Amino acid sequence: MTPQSFCSYLFLLVYVAAIIAKPSPYRALYMVPLIALYTYAVFFTQPTGDAHSDYYIGLNMSIPLAYASSYIFLSDPQLYLRRKGQKELAYQMPFIPRLRWATDLAFNCRAVGWDCELPKLRRSLLSRWPFVRTQLLWLVYYYAMNDLASYLNSRNPATWKESDEHFGTHGFLWQIWNVMLFWGTVIAHMSVNYTLLSIIMVAIGWYDPSDFPAYFGRWLDTVSVRKFWGQSWHQLIRRSLQPHGQYLARNIFGFQKGTTLSSYTQLFACFFLSGVYHAAGDWTLAHNVDIAKHTMQFYMLQAMAITFEDGVIAVAKRFGVRRVPLLPYLWVIFWLTISTPVWATGMARGGLGDFPPRFPIIPTIIKKFNAA
Image (cartoon, rainbow, N blue to C red; front, side, top):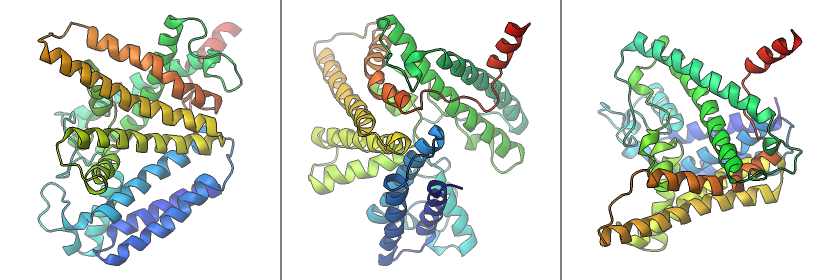
């Protein structure tokens, strides 16, 4: 086990312990070891050479650190958060039930089954075994998608670590293709892991199908950049972002809830913090300031794009302009096409241009075919 991995596991144990602890002014002391472990793992260790492991050290420690900040500095979840159907508050529970409560809260990023559950989650209406069978089909689909994307990336110099080729080297259509391949690779990789987990947990009876809503929203609802990030894309980090954005807007700047200044302060704060998460992953991946800087630029550009499109929509409504069919989709595709390379190129140069499956199928078939 590497020092980074040891720190990350110890970090998660302290994180859960902080949530288990009953309300007390001394709960804030849990942030001391959390910050110390985070600082050491992210800034005082060297990359191991395993790109995926290195990247996830920075990313997956940044997100719970922000959740810990929310649960320790900005609120005390035992005083107000409940699972659906929960009668007593968490601090009134015996230790073992409170341990289960805290563990669920710590790792249930979308708060599925809680009174603070994120809106518009797409739940399955299937019973146990039909759900498992359906998820098995989706698993095959996502695995094949990931395998194909990995094979295409292995043939694409734009995603290689040692390459001078960029996403748009061969023109705008080539850039569109590379951006689609990048997002498709990420979607397939994340969906494989989530789908496999849902199959196992539901099959053994630990969870119900309703506890595993769809990982992503409906892509046909992606009619704006705001919809892409706030509804279609996974919402795993949303609840770690919002409390800090709200605190900045209302407690630091004093903006009234619901005002334009409050809303856009929160918007930019959330994308800034999201950029920090991913830039931390870039740093642990390659210890390259330029790559981390480009990641921050990408996420701040998303906030700027949302602000721009909000203005355009407001002007269009004022003058009675109706929505033009397909134009919103074309706008989102265009924006992602021109902005994604700011982030994805750096990831590729850091060695994370691909998420290959553990057991590749397509390359094996092609090798046997060529050898025949």
